[in-house]
Image (tube, rainbow, N blue to C red; front, side, top):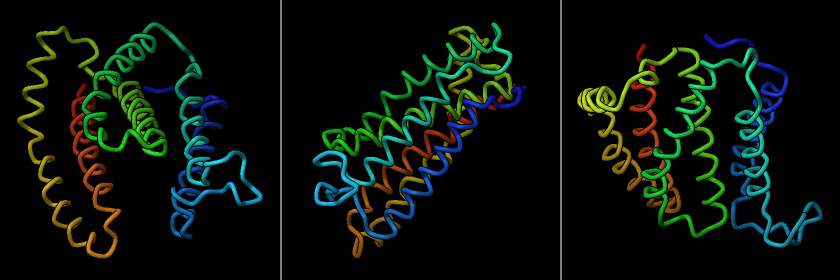
Length: 201
């Protein structure tokens, strides 16, 4: 069970939520990734956009959450942290393959970094709250567990063709949203399966 949030974590979560809300309204108002703020009074550097600036802030807020010690830090929390770091590093490989075509752009790299950091925070908090069984399994037990989880979570892959159909329809008017939708659903499918595996006590 997780102890109460310390003040540093709380600051990180507040900044993160504000940044997500800001990203939503910035895009609603049409200040997209390609709009250069170099000609705007609030510009900080050439090539910096408002979206990129907020993404930087969002990523920093998540780093604050990740690197701040937990209340009542002990050996159990250290074990969970070590496991989640390794798991996230391994999980980042398929995530990077999904985003391979977009990683050449600075904005996409910021998004990818944010996705990996968010994934770490989600899995870490689940493991901390549930005291997940997978943390204490050996390699052979994990292999069996992964196979069983894959069998039970096959339905999650149905998200991809479903969203592809929706995406094709949307792309007739907003074609730039199509790859974002596909990537988003691929990540969601992966996340659902990971959450399921780490939810088991």
